[in-house]
Amino acid sequence: MYDPLRAKAKVALYSTVAFLFGMGLASSMGWTESSHAMPVVTTAPQVSEEAVRPAMDLSDAFVNLSDVVTPAVVRIVSVRRAQRSAQGGGTPEEIPEQFRPFFNIPEGGEPIPRTSGGSGFLISQDGYILTNNHVVEGSDQLTVYLSDRRYFPAEIVGTDPFTDVAVIKIDAGEPLTAISFGDSDDVRVGEWVLAIGNPGFGASTQLDFTVTAGIVSARGRPLGLLQNDADRRFGSELAGYAIEDFIQTDAVINPGNSGGPMVNLQGQVVGINSAIASSTGVYAGYGFAIPVNLARRVMEDLVEYGHVKRPRLGVQIDDVEPEDAEIYGLPSVSGVRVGGVPDDGPASGILRQEDVIVALDGDPVGYVAELQARIAQYRPGDRVTVTIYRDRSPRDETIRLGEAPINDIPTTVAARDELAEERLGINVEEMSPELAEQYGLSEPEGVVLSNVARASPAARRNVQNYINWKLVRVNDTAISTTDDVRRALDAVGAGDIVQLYFENPNGDVRFENVRMPS
Image (cartoon, rainbow, N blue to C red; front, side, top):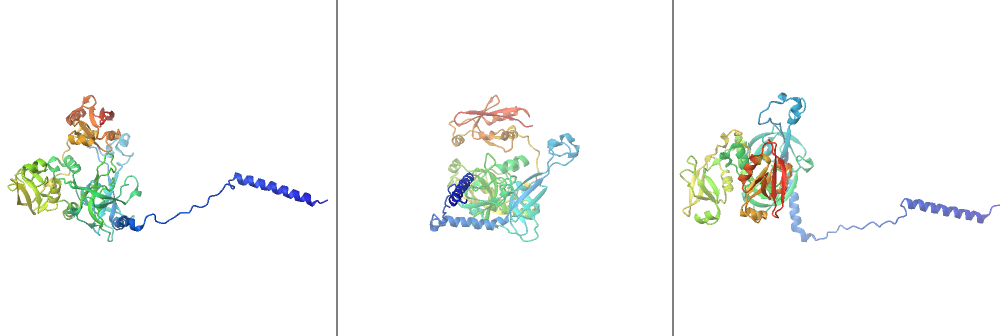
Protein backbone atom coordinates (compact mmCIF):
# COMPACT_ATOMS: atom_id res chain seq x y z
CA MET A 1 0.00 0.00 0.00
CA TYR A 2 1.32 3.42 -0.98
CA ASP A 3 2.55 5.41 2.00
CA PRO A 4 2.96 9.13 1.18
CA LEU A 5 5.05 9.81 4.28
CA ARG A 6 7.47 7.02 3.44
CA ALA A 7 7.73 8.30 -0.18
CA LYS A 8 8.54 11.80 1.01
CA ALA A 9 11.20 10.42 3.33
CA LYS A 10 12.83 8.53 0.44
CA VAL A 11 12.86 11.65 -1.73
CA ALA A 12 14.40 13.67 1.07
CA LEU A 13 17.03 10.97 1.63
CA TYR A 14 17.93 10.73 -2.06
CA SER A 15 18.08 14.50 -2.36
CA THR A 16 20.40 14.77 0.61
CA VAL A 17 22.71 12.07 -0.77
CA ALA A 18 22.74 13.75 -4.18
CA PHE A 19 23.49 17.13 -2.60
CA LEU A 20 26.33 15.76 -0.50
CA PHE A 21 27.77 13.89 -3.51
CA GLY A 22 27.57 17.04 -5.63
CA MET A 23 29.25 19.11 -2.92
CA GLY A 24 32.06 16.59 -2.69
CA LEU A 25 32.54 16.56 -6.44
CA ALA A 26 32.49 20.37 -6.62
CA SER A 27 34.93 20.63 -3.73
CA SER A 28 37.34 18.20 -5.38
CA MET A 29 37.24 20.31 -8.54
CA GLY A 30 37.76 23.58 -6.71
CA TRP A 31 34.30 24.92 -7.51
CA THR A 32 33.47 25.80 -3.93
CA GLU A 33 36.53 28.01 -3.27
CA SER A 34 35.72 31.61 -2.54
CA SER A 35 36.10 33.96 -5.58
CA HIS A 36 37.74 37.41 -5.61
CA ALA A 37 36.18 40.56 -6.83
CA MET A 38 37.79 42.00 -9.98
CA PRO A 39 40.24 44.75 -8.89
CA VAL A 40 39.37 48.24 -9.94
CA VAL A 41 42.24 49.80 -11.89
CA THR A 42 42.75 53.49 -12.50
CA THR A 43 44.11 55.21 -15.56
CA ALA A 44 44.12 58.71 -14.14
CA PRO A 45 47.48 60.57 -14.44
CA GLN A 46 49.39 60.62 -11.16
CA VAL A 47 51.20 63.85 -12.01
CA SER A 48 49.68 66.82 -13.79
CA GLU A 49 50.68 67.41 -17.40
CA GLU A 50 51.87 70.91 -16.53
CA ALA A 51 54.32 69.55 -13.95
CA VAL A 52 56.12 67.35 -16.50
CA ARG A 53 55.57 69.40 -19.64
CA PRO A 54 59.33 70.04 -20.32
CA ALA A 55 60.10 66.31 -20.14
CA MET A 56 57.09 65.44 -22.31
CA ASP A 57 58.19 68.01 -24.89
CA LEU A 58 61.65 66.42 -24.98
CA SER A 59 60.11 62.97 -25.30
CA ASP A 60 57.95 64.17 -28.18
CA ALA A 61 61.04 65.65 -29.80
CA PHE A 62 62.83 62.28 -29.62
CA VAL A 63 59.79 60.57 -31.17
CA ASN A 64 59.60 63.10 -34.00
CA LEU A 65 63.35 62.87 -34.62
CA SER A 66 63.22 59.09 -34.78
CA ASP A 67 60.33 59.17 -37.26
CA VAL A 68 62.16 61.62 -39.53
CA VAL A 69 65.73 60.28 -39.37
CA THR A 70 65.35 56.47 -39.20
CA PRO A 71 64.21 56.08 -42.86
CA ALA A 72 67.60 57.50 -43.93
CA VAL A 73 69.58 54.97 -41.85
CA VAL A 74 70.71 51.70 -43.44
CA ARG A 75 72.16 48.37 -42.37
CA ILE A 76 75.26 47.27 -44.26
CA VAL A 77 76.28 43.63 -44.63
CA SER A 78 79.80 42.95 -45.90
CA VAL A 79 81.04 39.59 -47.19
CA ARG A 80 84.78 38.98 -47.35
CA ARG A 81 86.37 35.89 -48.78
CA ALA A 82 88.77 34.10 -46.42
CA GLN A 83 92.32 35.29 -46.99
CA ARG A 84 95.34 33.11 -47.55
CA SER A 85 97.89 32.96 -44.75
CA ALA A 86 100.57 35.68 -44.81
CA GLN A 87 103.19 32.99 -44.27
CA GLY A 88 102.34 31.46 -47.63
CA GLY A 89 100.33 28.41 -48.54
CA GLY A 90 98.46 27.53 -51.67
CA THR A 91 95.02 27.89 -53.09
CA PRO A 92 92.19 25.77 -51.63
CA GLU A 93 92.82 23.17 -54.33
CA GLU A 94 96.44 22.81 -53.17
CA ILE A 95 95.49 22.13 -49.53
CA PRO A 96 95.02 18.43 -48.70
CA GLU A 97 91.44 17.45 -47.86
CA GLN A 98 92.32 16.32 -44.32
CA PHE A 99 93.68 19.77 -43.48
CA ARG A 100 90.89 21.86 -45.00
CA PRO A 101 88.79 22.05 -41.82
CA PHE A 102 91.69 23.88 -40.13
CA PHE A 103 91.50 26.54 -42.88
CA ASN A 104 87.73 26.89 -42.61
CA ILE A 105 87.33 25.09 -45.95
CA PRO A 106 84.65 22.41 -46.35
CA GLU A 107 85.53 19.25 -48.19
CA GLY A 108 85.82 19.93 -51.89
CA GLY A 109 84.84 23.57 -51.41
CA GLU A 110 86.16 27.11 -51.22
CA PRO A 111 86.92 29.00 -47.96
CA ILE A 112 83.75 29.98 -46.10
CA PRO A 113 83.24 33.76 -46.52
CA ARG A 114 83.33 36.01 -43.47
CA THR A 115 80.27 38.17 -42.89
CA SER A 116 80.39 41.41 -40.93
CA GLY A 117 78.57 44.69 -41.06
CA GLY A 118 77.54 47.95 -39.56
CA SER A 119 75.42 50.99 -40.25
CA GLY A 120 75.32 53.94 -42.62
CA PHE A 121 73.02 56.73 -43.72
CA LEU A 122 71.74 58.06 -47.03
CA ILE A 123 73.17 61.48 -47.92
CA SER A 124 71.36 61.91 -51.25
CA GLN A 125 68.15 60.75 -52.86
CA ASP A 126 70.08 58.93 -55.59
CA GLY A 127 71.58 56.43 -53.17
CA TYR A 128 74.92 57.76 -51.91
CA ILE A 129 75.63 56.46 -48.38
CA LEU A 130 78.15 57.66 -45.80
CA THR A 131 79.65 55.10 -43.40
CA ASN A 132 82.93 54.05 -41.76
CA ASN A 133 85.88 52.78 -43.74
CA HIS A 134 86.27 49.84 -41.36
CA VAL A 135 82.70 48.70 -42.11
CA VAL A 136 83.27 48.22 -45.85
CA GLU A 137 87.02 48.07 -46.50
CA GLY A 138 88.14 44.85 -48.15
CA SER A 139 84.59 43.74 -48.90
CA ASP A 140 83.94 41.44 -51.85
CA GLN A 141 80.18 41.92 -51.64
CA LEU A 142 78.08 44.64 -50.02
CA THR A 143 74.35 44.56 -49.37
CA VAL A 144 72.41 47.53 -48.00
CA TYR A 145 69.14 47.03 -46.11
CA LEU A 146 66.70 49.92 -45.79
CA SER A 147 64.38 50.48 -42.86
CA ASP A 148 61.40 49.31 -44.98
CA ARG A 149 63.14 45.89 -45.35
CA ARG A 150 64.12 46.34 -48.99
CA TYR A 151 67.73 45.56 -49.82
CA PHE A 152 70.09 46.35 -52.69
CA PRO A 153 73.65 45.52 -53.74
CA ALA A 154 76.10 48.36 -53.16
CA GLU A 155 79.38 49.47 -54.71
CA ILE A 156 82.25 51.22 -52.95
CA VAL A 157 82.76 54.77 -54.25
CA GLY A 158 85.83 55.48 -52.13
CA THR A 159 87.40 54.93 -48.71
CA ASP A 160 89.81 56.85 -46.49
CA PRO A 161 91.55 54.93 -43.69
CA PHE A 162 93.10 58.14 -42.34
CA THR A 163 89.70 59.45 -41.21
CA ASP A 164 87.75 56.12 -41.19
CA VAL A 165 85.23 57.52 -43.69
CA ALA A 166 83.79 55.70 -46.71
CA VAL A 167 81.16 56.35 -49.35
CA ILE A 168 79.12 53.59 -51.00
CA LYS A 169 76.19 53.74 -53.43
CA ILE A 170 73.02 51.80 -54.21
CA ASP A 171 70.57 52.08 -57.10
CA ALA A 172 67.01 51.77 -55.81
CA GLY A 173 65.41 53.02 -59.01
CA GLU A 174 63.54 55.75 -57.15
CA PRO A 175 64.28 58.74 -54.89
CA LEU A 176 65.23 57.74 -51.34
CA THR A 177 64.97 59.56 -48.02
CA ALA A 178 68.23 61.39 -47.31
CA ILE A 179 69.47 62.89 -44.06
CA SER A 180 70.15 66.59 -43.47
CA PHE A 181 73.65 67.81 -42.59
CA GLY A 182 74.37 69.95 -39.54
CA ASP A 183 77.50 71.86 -38.50
CA SER A 184 79.70 69.87 -36.13
CA ASP A 185 81.66 73.02 -35.25
CA ASP A 186 78.50 74.27 -33.52
CA VAL A 187 78.12 71.15 -31.36
CA ARG A 188 78.23 72.05 -27.67
CA VAL A 189 79.21 69.90 -24.72
CA GLY A 190 76.02 69.02 -22.84
CA GLU A 191 73.57 69.17 -25.75
CA TRP A 192 71.26 66.27 -26.51
CA VAL A 193 72.04 63.95 -29.41
CA LEU A 194 70.59 60.71 -30.78
CA ALA A 195 72.66 57.79 -32.07
CA ILE A 196 70.96 55.53 -34.62
CA GLY A 197 72.23 52.23 -35.98
CA ASN A 198 72.15 48.47 -35.82
CA PRO A 199 73.86 47.30 -32.60
CA GLY A 200 72.62 43.74 -32.97
CA PHE A 201 74.61 42.83 -36.06
CA GLY A 202 76.05 39.37 -35.59
CA ALA A 203 73.62 38.64 -32.75
CA SER A 204 70.12 39.36 -34.00
CA THR A 205 68.63 41.50 -36.72
CA GLN A 206 65.80 42.16 -34.27
CA LEU A 207 68.00 45.02 -32.97
CA ASP A 208 68.04 46.81 -36.33
CA PHE A 209 67.51 50.57 -36.43
CA THR A 210 67.89 51.19 -32.71
CA VAL A 211 67.66 54.77 -31.41
CA THR A 212 69.53 55.82 -28.25
CA ALA A 213 69.78 59.24 -26.63
CA GLY A 214 72.51 60.98 -24.67
CA ILE A 215 74.47 64.18 -24.44
CA VAL A 216 77.72 65.35 -25.97
CA SER A 217 80.26 64.56 -23.27
CA ALA A 218 83.35 66.16 -24.82
CA ARG A 219 84.91 67.31 -28.06
CA GLY A 220 88.32 66.80 -29.61
CA ARG A 221 88.99 63.34 -28.21
CA PRO A 222 92.02 61.48 -29.65
CA LEU A 223 91.94 57.69 -29.20
CA GLY A 224 95.06 56.55 -31.07
CA LEU A 225 93.04 54.00 -33.05
CA LEU A 226 93.55 55.46 -36.52
CA GLN A 227 97.18 56.39 -35.89
CA ASN A 228 97.98 52.88 -34.70
CA ASP A 229 96.24 51.34 -37.69
CA ALA A 230 98.02 53.71 -40.10
CA ASP A 231 101.35 52.94 -38.44
CA ARG A 232 100.77 49.22 -38.85
CA ARG A 233 99.66 49.49 -42.48
CA PHE A 234 101.54 52.44 -43.94
CA GLY A 235 104.45 53.12 -41.60
CA SER A 236 105.12 55.72 -38.91
CA GLU A 237 105.97 58.50 -41.40
CA LEU A 238 102.42 58.57 -42.73
CA ALA A 239 100.61 57.71 -39.49
CA GLY A 240 100.67 61.42 -38.58
CA TYR A 241 98.16 62.10 -41.35
CA ALA A 242 95.48 60.13 -39.49
CA ILE A 243 92.97 62.58 -38.01
CA GLU A 244 91.35 61.89 -34.64
CA ASP A 245 89.09 64.68 -33.44
CA PHE A 246 86.18 62.62 -32.09
CA ILE A 247 82.98 63.88 -30.48
CA GLN A 248 82.39 61.94 -27.27
CA THR A 249 78.86 61.01 -26.16
CA ASP A 250 77.17 58.90 -23.52
CA ALA A 251 74.47 57.79 -25.99
CA VAL A 252 74.64 54.00 -26.12
CA ILE A 253 76.84 52.84 -29.03
CA ASN A 254 77.72 49.18 -29.56
CA PRO A 255 79.44 47.19 -32.32
CA GLY A 256 77.20 47.39 -35.38
CA ASN A 257 76.39 51.05 -34.70
CA SER A 258 79.57 51.96 -36.58
CA GLY A 259 78.76 54.21 -39.53
CA GLY A 260 75.36 55.29 -38.23
CA PRO A 261 74.44 58.94 -37.73
CA MET A 262 74.66 61.04 -34.58
CA VAL A 263 71.96 63.71 -34.93
CA ASN A 264 71.08 66.87 -33.04
CA LEU A 265 67.61 67.86 -31.88
CA GLN A 266 66.88 69.42 -35.26
CA GLY A 267 67.36 66.09 -37.00
CA GLN A 268 70.68 67.08 -38.59
CA VAL A 269 73.61 64.69 -38.64
CA VAL A 270 76.57 66.09 -36.70
CA GLY A 271 78.75 62.97 -36.53
CA ILE A 272 79.33 59.39 -37.69
CA ASN A 273 79.23 56.85 -34.87
CA SER A 274 82.63 55.22 -35.05
CA ALA A 275 84.09 53.77 -31.86
CA ILE A 276 83.61 52.89 -28.20
CA ALA A 277 86.00 52.87 -25.27
CA SER A 278 85.49 49.60 -23.45
CA SER A 279 87.50 46.74 -21.98
CA THR A 280 84.80 44.24 -22.96
CA GLY A 281 83.95 45.34 -26.50
CA VAL A 282 80.45 46.51 -25.54
CA TYR A 283 79.10 49.83 -24.34
CA ALA A 284 80.73 51.17 -21.18
CA GLY A 285 79.59 54.81 -21.20
CA TYR A 286 81.93 56.22 -23.83
CA GLY A 287 80.98 56.52 -27.49
CA PHE A 288 82.80 58.46 -30.18
CA ALA A 289 81.75 60.00 -33.49
CA ILE A 290 83.64 61.56 -36.40
CA PRO A 291 82.64 65.23 -36.79
CA VAL A 292 80.41 65.53 -39.85
CA ASN A 293 82.24 68.62 -41.19
CA LEU A 294 85.38 66.52 -41.60
CA ALA A 295 83.41 63.56 -42.99
CA ARG A 296 81.60 65.80 -45.49
CA ARG A 297 84.88 67.22 -46.83
CA VAL A 298 86.27 63.68 -47.23
CA MET A 299 83.02 62.53 -48.84
CA GLU A 300 83.19 65.28 -51.47
CA ASP A 301 86.66 64.17 -52.56
CA LEU A 302 85.73 60.50 -52.58
CA VAL A 303 82.75 61.16 -54.84
CA GLU A 304 84.66 63.52 -57.14
CA TYR A 305 88.05 61.79 -57.34
CA GLY A 306 87.66 58.36 -55.76
CA HIS A 307 90.28 59.29 -53.16
CA VAL A 308 91.01 62.16 -50.77
CA LYS A 309 93.19 65.09 -51.77
CA ARG A 310 94.49 65.88 -48.30
CA PRO A 311 96.05 69.34 -47.81
CA ARG A 312 99.38 69.65 -46.03
CA LEU A 313 100.64 72.48 -43.83
CA GLY A 314 104.07 70.92 -43.48
CA VAL A 315 104.96 71.22 -39.79
CA GLN A 316 105.70 68.87 -36.89
CA ILE A 317 103.38 69.77 -34.05
CA ASP A 318 102.56 69.07 -30.39
CA ASP A 319 99.91 70.25 -27.95
CA VAL A 320 100.73 73.26 -25.80
CA GLU A 321 101.41 72.52 -22.13
CA PRO A 322 101.36 74.98 -19.17
CA GLU A 323 105.13 75.36 -19.32
CA ASP A 324 104.92 76.30 -23.01
CA ALA A 325 102.23 78.91 -22.35
CA GLU A 326 104.42 80.51 -19.71
CA ILE A 327 107.65 80.62 -21.68
CA TYR A 328 106.05 81.79 -24.96
CA GLY A 329 103.79 84.37 -23.33
CA LEU A 330 100.51 82.81 -24.42
CA PRO A 331 97.25 84.23 -23.05
CA SER A 332 96.05 80.70 -22.14
CA VAL A 333 97.17 77.06 -22.18
CA SER A 334 95.89 76.58 -25.72
CA GLY A 335 97.42 76.22 -29.13
CA VAL A 336 99.76 74.01 -31.13
CA ARG A 337 103.52 74.17 -30.70
CA VAL A 338 105.68 73.86 -33.83
CA GLY A 339 108.37 71.28 -33.16
CA GLY A 340 109.95 71.39 -36.61
CA VAL A 341 109.49 72.68 -40.17
CA PRO A 342 110.70 70.34 -42.96
CA ASP A 343 112.62 72.14 -45.71
CA ASP A 344 110.39 70.73 -48.43
CA GLY A 345 107.10 71.66 -46.76
CA PRO A 346 104.65 74.49 -47.56
CA ALA A 347 105.50 76.27 -44.28
CA SER A 348 109.27 76.23 -44.92
CA GLY A 349 110.70 79.75 -44.59
CA ILE A 350 107.45 81.02 -43.09
CA LEU A 351 107.01 79.22 -39.77
CA ARG A 352 109.81 78.40 -37.34
CA GLN A 353 110.52 75.91 -34.64
CA GLU A 354 108.94 77.09 -31.34
CA ASP A 355 106.23 79.13 -33.06
CA VAL A 356 102.83 78.47 -31.47
CA ILE A 357 99.80 78.30 -33.78
CA VAL A 358 96.76 79.77 -32.00
CA ALA A 359 94.32 80.45 -34.86
CA LEU A 360 93.52 79.47 -38.45
CA ASP A 361 91.79 82.05 -40.65
CA GLY A 362 90.82 83.93 -37.51
CA ASP A 363 89.24 80.97 -35.68
CA PRO A 364 91.03 79.83 -32.49
CA VAL A 365 92.90 76.52 -32.52
CA GLY A 366 93.37 74.79 -29.19
CA TYR A 367 95.05 71.43 -29.83
CA VAL A 368 96.70 69.25 -32.47
CA ALA A 369 93.66 67.23 -33.57
CA GLU A 370 91.63 70.40 -33.98
CA LEU A 371 94.29 71.94 -36.24
CA GLN A 372 94.51 68.74 -38.29
CA ALA A 373 90.73 68.54 -38.70
CA ARG A 374 90.50 72.22 -39.64
CA ILE A 375 93.30 71.98 -42.22
CA ALA A 376 91.63 68.86 -43.68
CA GLN A 377 88.58 70.94 -44.57
CA TYR A 378 90.64 72.90 -47.12
CA ARG A 379 92.06 71.68 -50.41
CA PRO A 380 95.63 71.58 -51.68
CA GLY A 381 96.53 74.97 -53.13
CA ASP A 382 94.25 76.95 -50.79
CA ARG A 383 95.83 79.86 -48.93
CA VAL A 384 95.28 80.06 -45.17
CA THR A 385 96.11 82.69 -42.59
CA VAL A 386 97.91 81.19 -39.62
CA THR A 387 98.05 83.22 -36.39
CA ILE A 388 101.16 82.38 -34.38
CA TYR A 389 102.90 83.55 -31.24
CA ARG A 390 106.56 84.33 -31.81
CA ASP A 391 108.79 86.24 -29.41
CA ARG A 392 105.86 86.43 -26.99
CA SER A 393 103.61 88.37 -29.40
CA PRO A 394 101.03 87.37 -32.04
CA ARG A 395 101.44 87.74 -35.78
CA ASP A 396 99.73 86.47 -38.94
CA GLU A 397 101.38 84.47 -41.70
CA THR A 398 99.86 83.34 -45.02
CA ILE A 399 100.68 79.83 -46.25
CA ARG A 400 99.65 78.06 -49.44
CA LEU A 401 98.78 74.47 -48.57
CA GLY A 402 100.50 71.59 -50.30
CA GLU A 403 99.17 68.07 -50.86
CA ALA A 404 99.86 65.18 -48.49
CA PRO A 405 101.54 62.17 -50.12
CA ILE A 406 98.95 59.69 -48.83
CA ASN A 407 97.70 58.79 -52.32
CA ASP A 408 101.17 57.78 -53.52
CA ILE A 409 101.51 54.96 -51.01
CA PRO A 410 100.85 51.28 -51.68
CA THR A 411 97.77 49.68 -50.18
CA THR A 412 99.96 48.29 -47.42
CA VAL A 413 103.62 48.51 -46.53
CA ALA A 414 105.85 45.63 -45.63
CA ALA A 415 104.56 44.32 -42.34
CA ARG A 416 106.71 45.13 -39.36
CA ASP A 417 107.44 42.43 -36.85
CA GLU A 418 104.52 42.09 -34.49
CA LEU A 419 105.44 42.70 -30.88
CA ALA A 420 104.99 39.83 -28.45
CA GLU A 421 102.47 41.76 -26.34
CA GLU A 422 100.45 42.51 -29.48
CA ARG A 423 100.32 38.82 -30.38
CA LEU A 424 99.26 38.05 -26.82
CA GLY A 425 96.66 40.83 -26.99
CA ILE A 426 97.66 43.05 -24.08
CA ASN A 427 98.60 46.71 -23.77
CA VAL A 428 100.61 48.00 -20.82
CA GLU A 429 101.65 51.46 -19.64
CA GLU A 430 104.35 52.63 -17.28
CA MET A 431 102.94 54.08 -14.10
CA SER A 432 102.84 57.84 -13.59
CA PRO A 433 101.50 59.89 -10.67
CA GLU A 434 98.39 60.65 -12.76
CA LEU A 435 97.76 56.98 -13.56
CA ALA A 436 98.43 55.96 -9.97
CA GLU A 437 95.81 58.42 -8.78
CA GLN A 438 93.38 57.31 -11.50
CA TYR A 439 93.77 53.62 -10.65
CA GLY A 440 93.84 54.11 -6.88
CA LEU A 441 97.45 52.92 -6.46
CA SER A 442 99.58 54.25 -3.63
CA GLU A 443 102.92 54.21 -5.48
CA PRO A 444 103.45 55.71 -8.96
CA GLU A 445 105.83 52.93 -9.98
CA GLY A 446 105.68 49.81 -12.12
CA VAL A 447 103.53 48.83 -15.08
CA VAL A 448 99.73 48.79 -15.37
CA LEU A 449 97.58 46.69 -17.72
CA SER A 450 95.58 49.24 -19.73
CA ASN A 451 93.77 47.17 -22.35
CA VAL A 452 93.12 43.67 -23.69
CA ALA A 453 92.26 43.10 -27.35
CA ARG A 454 88.96 41.36 -28.07
CA ALA A 455 89.19 37.70 -29.12
CA SER A 456 92.93 37.66 -28.36
CA PRO A 457 94.68 34.80 -26.50
CA ALA A 458 94.72 37.02 -23.39
CA ALA A 459 90.99 37.75 -23.71
CA ARG A 460 90.21 34.04 -24.02
CA ARG A 461 91.90 33.57 -20.63
CA ASN A 462 89.90 36.47 -19.08
CA VAL A 463 92.95 38.69 -18.62
CA GLN A 464 90.62 41.68 -19.14
CA ASN A 465 89.52 41.11 -15.54
CA TYR A 466 92.85 42.64 -14.48
CA ILE A 467 92.68 45.90 -16.42
CA ASN A 468 93.99 48.75 -14.22
CA TRP A 469 95.95 46.22 -12.11
CA LYS A 470 99.74 46.31 -11.96
CA LEU A 471 101.59 43.66 -13.98
CA VAL A 472 104.24 42.58 -11.47
CA ARG A 473 105.70 39.41 -12.97
CA VAL A 474 105.93 37.57 -16.30
CA ASN A 475 106.98 33.97 -15.69
CA ASP A 476 110.03 34.37 -13.41
CA THR A 477 110.81 37.96 -14.42
CA ALA A 478 109.91 40.81 -12.09
CA ILE A 479 108.37 43.74 -13.96
CA SER A 480 109.26 47.39 -13.35
CA THR A 481 109.10 48.92 -16.84
CA THR A 482 107.42 48.26 -20.17
CA ASP A 483 110.83 47.21 -21.52
CA ASP A 484 110.86 44.46 -18.87
CA VAL A 485 107.52 43.22 -20.24
CA ARG A 486 108.80 43.20 -23.80
CA ARG A 487 112.02 41.34 -22.97
CA ALA A 488 110.18 38.76 -20.86
CA LEU A 489 107.57 38.08 -23.55
CA ASP A 490 110.17 37.97 -26.33
CA ALA A 491 111.75 35.07 -24.49
CA VAL A 492 108.52 33.06 -24.72
CA GLY A 493 108.37 30.76 -27.72
CA ALA A 494 105.37 30.28 -29.97
CA GLY A 495 103.01 27.75 -28.44
CA ASP A 496 104.57 28.06 -24.96
CA ILE A 497 102.58 29.15 -21.93
CA VAL A 498 103.30 32.48 -20.29
CA GLN A 499 102.29 33.22 -16.68
CA LEU A 500 101.10 36.75 -16.01
CA TYR A 501 100.91 37.95 -12.40
CA PHE A 502 98.78 40.97 -11.51
CA GLU A 503 98.43 42.97 -8.29
CA ASN A 504 95.43 45.10 -7.35
CA PRO A 505 95.47 48.26 -5.16
CA ASN A 506 94.88 46.10 -2.05
CA GLY A 507 98.03 44.10 -2.71
CA ASP A 508 96.18 40.95 -3.79
CA VAL A 509 98.03 39.01 -6.49
CA ARG A 510 96.29 36.94 -9.17
CA PHE A 511 97.66 35.19 -12.23
CA GLU A 512 96.57 33.76 -15.57
CA ASN A 513 98.27 31.22 -17.83
CA VAL A 514 98.11 32.21 -21.49
CA ARG A 515 99.49 30.34 -24.48
CA MET A 516 101.65 32.46 -26.79
CA PRO A 517 100.32 32.21 -30.36
CA SER A 518 102.59 31.52 -33.30
